[in-house]
Amino acid sequence: MPLFYCPDIATRRELPEEEAAHALRVLRLGVGENVQLTDGKGHFYEAVISEVAGKRCYVDILSQTTPAPQWQGQLHLAVSPTKNMDRMEWLAEKATEIGFDELSLLDCRYSERHVVKTERLDKILVAAMKQSLKATKPILNEMMPFDRFVRQPFTGQKFIAHCYSEEEIAEKTLDCQPETRYGTTSFRLSLHDALRPDEDALVLIGPEGDFSVDEVRLALSLGFQSVSLSHSRLRTETAALVAVHLMNLSHSNS
Image 1 (tube, rainbow, N blue to C red):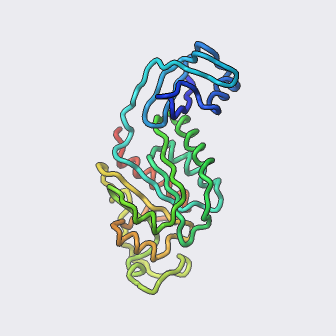
Image 2 (cartoon, rainbow, N blue to C red):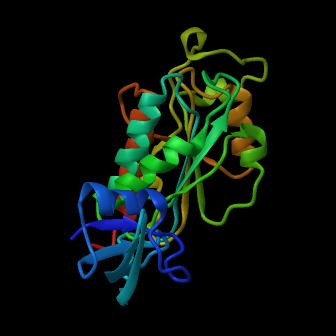
Image 3 (spheres, helix red, strand yellow):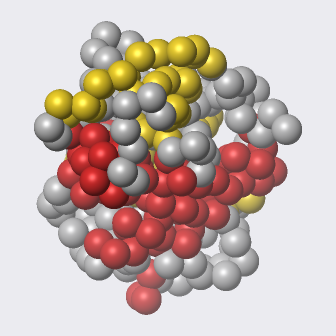
């Protein structure tokens, strides 16, 4: 049965324009045919098409269900967008298929992209939600400067994934990109070991050039915990997807 995204279905029994076009023109559905809807807020609706008026499609709700959450707590990913937006779109799609609750975009010192139009990313989140048969659409936040983002209140565990050693964090004059850094001593737990499944979790992922050391120091001073995602050096979108996967595994209800 087709699944359609109707965020206002609780108060408005009409499919949004884009969803109506897909139902009527692509799938050629008509009056009397059953459809499945989600409001993206955690609910599914069984419905029947009750009226078609030109490009408009109206439905009658037959039943509503609220599936049990597939994971505990709120899973929040904050990432510095890549220069190539195709990679961010891939991340948004795959992270939604795996499962998470919120995506924030960070403007960092070494970010390759400082402006992001979120309309297309939001459409990808919707499509991935429908494809993976989820009832909740991840929240997508507009891009925000790193220092302002990390100062916001957040309940739960807060992590920052970076490649600095303890010596580098302690060196007050150091502020350079990974290619010119030194030090090998690691003080970072793996995210897998650090996560507690009964708490909300926020993970920060930096740009290809990593966070600046000052950004890491600021986050640590505000209660973030340094974590590692892999023994390998990961690209931004890969690191972000690994973080979502680990959060999902730790918080899974299955």
